[in-house]
Length: 401
Image 1 (cartoon, one colour):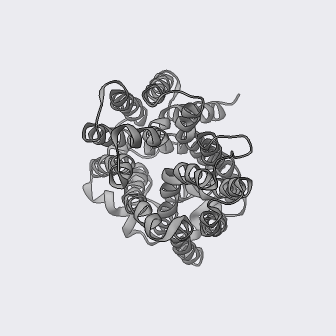
Image 2: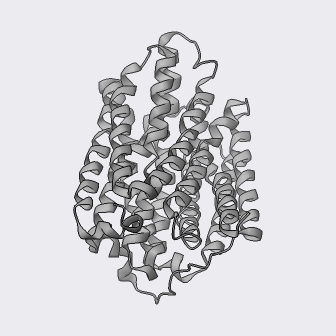
Image 3: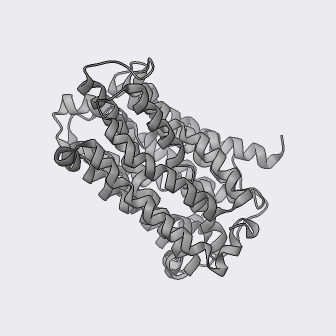
């Protein structure tokens, strides 16, 4: 197997193993709601704490130019170890919401060192086909994010689910330590410059790509955080049943993990037909699914599952391509910092959309709540359409806009 392909496979496995930490609390949320008597605020807080930690970690990392001045492999390894420890501590010792929120915040900080550095490492191995390579990487991340739902679905108690996710993350750290390396297309070594944390907003092309990413993120993490609750409550309101033989946890894993197919297909389409072409099409499709899926609440489970699966595929098909675009539109010496700033801004926005879902559901129901998520991809399409008309777009995908 060629070295670049081997590194792609290894890094993808690492991300799959490590990123299970992200939604491990969301996967066990029904149990925690019962055992800890959590309300809407506490339930949303367990996911928002991770997002807030990720924002703090990416902001500090970007201001310090950490992904560019430190070896990204080491940042990845030690971040995975920290995240596994914080998540495992919840499973071993925590009995109430407050310490869980603190430890989930630390987990989010750790994820800031596990995600952007991996994308930078991958970019050092690929010039041609970079969109597909990062798409495969984000696909692995997507499956990893869904893994706690699979673990929970096979019957482990909530503490066992968290501990299993931590064990997988430690295995990922060990694999990265022994096997992952930067490639031959390394970016220039930079000097420390705190101003470069905001360069992604100064460059017109990168700024529009970032705005497109913000529209995408408004929808993505709110859907990932709450689709499991939606599927469970939909069956309950119907009076029972299953999703083609799957319980809600198994169906949630399938819906989120199906995004890996979207990432793979999106990467290939993006490299062949252009970044803006792919991102605009994916956001239009996922926005349509967001507008429709919620209105199937308490309806035929098979219809709900099919729409949710299409949503799961399309909602993340463009995710890697926004990051790929940033690697092509940003100053080469600060690509890691630009990626980190982009993700920091995107995840800051996710806190709002995740928090809004429970009160919107109470007031308007799941249909109109998911419909509101479609506003993000609609605005994202406008941003990427504007980028497509600019000369900077010729730097995307070797001139394929």
